[in-house]
Amino acid sequence: MGGGSKTKAAGILLLGLVWTGPSFAESAGCFHFGYEIENLEAASAVSLARINDRSPRVNFVKREVIQKGCPSTSAACKDKAYLVPGDEVVISGSRGEFVCASYAGRTGALTEGWLPRDAISPVQEAPVERREGWIGQWRSGPEQTIVLEGGAAQNSLKIKGDATWGASDPGRVARGAVNVGELEGEAPLRGSALSFGMGENGTLPYTEADESDCRVQMRRLGPYLLVKDNNMCGGHNVTFTGIYRRAR
Image 1 (tube, rainbow, N blue to C red):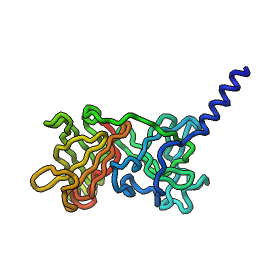
Image 2: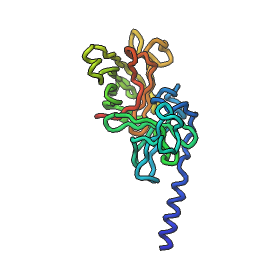
Image 3: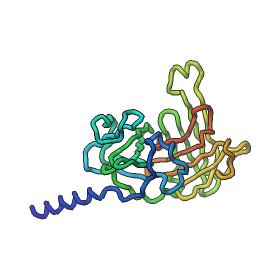
């Protein structure tokens, strides 16, 4: 009985050591993923975390644009969306005792908002450097798909993506008011990152592409493919920026 008490006490102590991962820049409002990130490839831009077992259910906390005075522990700030122990999230910012988190489900549906800092624990995963860890079809929500295949060079990838804005709105579909965008190119991997530009004559190194060209950064993190573009990869409001889950 005494030994069990010691084990329980040790477990409580470990739960108190929650976040020892990288610190994050102050988030202005925990907007949609990528909004406050300038360089997705920077080590400190994002981090992977896992919902710990301090509670069987952890609700997201509303953003200030939705509920004035949030994030806070008040009942008014408690969102309906929740996660359970073991769910992995992408952390991209913080404010006081809260972190800005994004979670993509198996279908690519994204849930974003604040989470209590003490509800998450950092995940230290080995970088995804082999291209086999990238290959597949990836989805982010209902309107963004990226397919990655092995390229001509040993450590390069062929990228093909399709994105729309308005395709989930029957009214826009009926009016023919759906905007579209696409990605197509081949680029070398650099550790867990990849970046490229799309010029008039094909794929360009990211740093050589003009601001008016489609410029894309990608990063593998845990089960996710993270993507950020410069909003020049398609029609009005079309973007590939997002958190993707492998569909197959």
